[in-house]
Structure formats: structure tokens, C-alpha cells
Image 1 (spheres, each protein chain N blue to C red):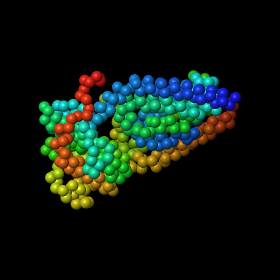
Image 2 (image 1 turned 180 degrees about the vertical axis):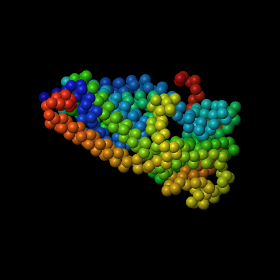
Image 3 (image 1 turned 180 degrees about the horizontal axis):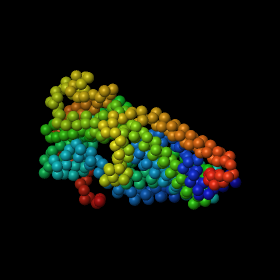
Image 4 (image 1 turned 120 degrees about the vertical axis):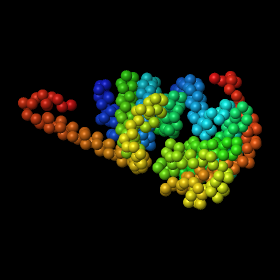
Length: 216
Length: 233
């Protein structure tokens, strides 16, 4: 009696799970192209904020490799690097490095670097820093992040690549030093990484297949 | 228990409001009510799930054994929340990114399983749908009012980033109440949400007491003013 009861209960629950799971799978199928398009548009917007679209003519989203350098790029996960080219010649890269020592947690960055080693733009992709204090690194909150554009390893010199409180040239925020300090350090390290590996960064073959290989 | 459609709507919107009376679903309420658009987004998502899950639970209410009803309800709710999450990811991607983890957390919102258990499993589909939508509307209402308060005091705007929800070209909806407003931080942080919600609950209780007093006074009015006595609800 008990076994029959248990079996019946299991079957009913299983049927519900099957129907529910099936419906969800169906909706997943339906929405998949839209989701892909949205994610791609979002990534492109960030890329175009750090590398102006008029400076390159390649499909930057698909010209991508991943690299790994836990010390300089702030994470042991593979780091995407997007390459911008004009007529096949290298123009700039966008490196998705991480500032691991934010006040609340790691801060994901997108650092655009031109061939000559100058910063073409930096944006914060995601962070959990305190609203009203550390979140000044967000471009929507303040212009602070624009202060990296045009900088390079020589501008300022090594001892200038800190927040002002530590003797450097970059502003810190009143009441929040740790956050800008982490971002300044991460941008500097990304520039160093670029300097060491720039040849390889442009020459390595893209891991993404070019468009037209059977997808929309 | 509310039976007529009018009573069901009244219960959901006011008399048994999830956020002001039942005090259910406070976690998303407090975390997401920072701006009107965020509040509206999560409120509508929750209402959608409430309606869908109430209808489904009502449809299968005779097929589910009493001992299995909790896992079955949770299963149904989780499927609806996943579907809503996918739809939001597909069509309002930026809003989806901002609401983040609170969309899948709708599954844990006590309102939904409470309505499934206490209403949808005992009433027909039509009434259950109405109940789900009314409870969701009441929840969304409180979310939006709280969001408006917090956004106005914390940022000095209303309906900022309207384009996240209504598409490009709807930026005109944003109202800037104070230019160059530095913002009152407390309103943006969780304590401000708690205080704001407390004020709203107090306000509702004051309104209820006043209207009860007015009703009692009308009852005691001399019979000559029969029209007045008949007018109390």
C-alpha cells in the first residue's frame, strides 16, 4: 500500500517536472536569438566607449583571444582581449582586466590601449562599491574614469601612477580612497601587461569564428 | 475569505496588501525600490508570476495530493520565474542587468506561495487569476510609491532611466526635481527603505482609522440624514 502510494506520488511529481521543464526549455529556445543579440549589443557599447568605432574597420567583437596573467590582469580566469584593426593593421586592443582589491570586491574593467601604448579609454563594467562613495569610478556617476584617456606608462612617470594621497597624480574621492586606488593600480598593471606582450596580442589568431559560419 | 471579484481586488490592493499588511516579500521590496523604474520592473515581473502560478495551481488543484502540494507549487513557481527571467533577458536586457539576482529570487517571494496555498488551491481559475493580479498590483503599487520616495529624496529625479523599460525615445518621462542635486544617501541605502516602508505602513493605518471613525460617526448620525448613513462603505 505504502509503496503504491509512494510510486504514484513520485510519478505525479515527475510529470509536473517534465511538463514544467519542457515549457521552460521551449521558452529558452524562443528567446535565445534575442538574448544573444542583447548581450552582443551591450558588449559592443562598452567596446565602443573605449575604442571609438571610427578608428577601426574590423568586427572587433569577433576578433578576440583570451590571455591569462593573474598578477597583472587581476584574476586567474582567462581574460578576453579584443583587437581593433584598420585595413588589417593593428589599431588598439581592449583588455577586460580586473581590479581585485576594490573595497567591497573585484572591479571588472575594460581598458582600451592604442598601438602606441596610450590609453584610449577605460570603463568600469561591473562593481559592488559603495553608492555615493566608491561608485564615483562609474562613468554614470562622475567623470573621474575619463582621466585615464591619453595616459601611458610614461605619462605620468612610475611614481605618478597612484592616487594623490599616495603621492601620485590621480584624484581620490572624499571618504573613499581604496576604490580609486585599486582602479589606478589595475590600469597601470594592464598597461604593463600590454607593453610586455603587445606583439603576441595582435598576432594570435582569433578564437571566435568570423560571422557567416552558419549563424544569423 | 474574499469571494466577490470586488472584494478580491480590494483585498489585494488595500485591505490585505502584501507589503503593508501581510508584510510578505519584503526582501525584494527593500532592495529594489531604489528608483521608480527598477521598482516597476520587479513589480510587473512578480505580478506576471503571481498571475501565472495562481492560474496553474488552480487548474491542477484537484490533481495534486495534499502531501505533495508544497513541492508542486514551488516547481510551478520556479518554472514561471525562469520563463519571466528569460523574457526579460531577451527584451529588456539593461533592466535585467540592473535587477540582477532579484529576478530569480522572485521564487522565494513568500507572497506567491502564500497565495497559491491559501487561495488558488481552493478557488476556481477566474478568481485565482484575479487574486494573483490584485495581490501583484498591490505589491507593485507599494514598490512604486516607495521607489518614488527614495528616488526623489535620494537622487532628486523621478522615472530616471525610463528608456530601460519603455525603450529608446522615452527619456522625456524622466522628471528632474532638483538640478545638480547631491542626493541624500540614506534614502538610497537599505535603512532608508526600512524607514520609508515604516512610514507607509503608518500612513495606511492612519487612513484606515480615520475612515473607520468617519464610518462610525455616520452610523450615529440622526435618522433625518438618511442619505449620509446609507453612503458609508
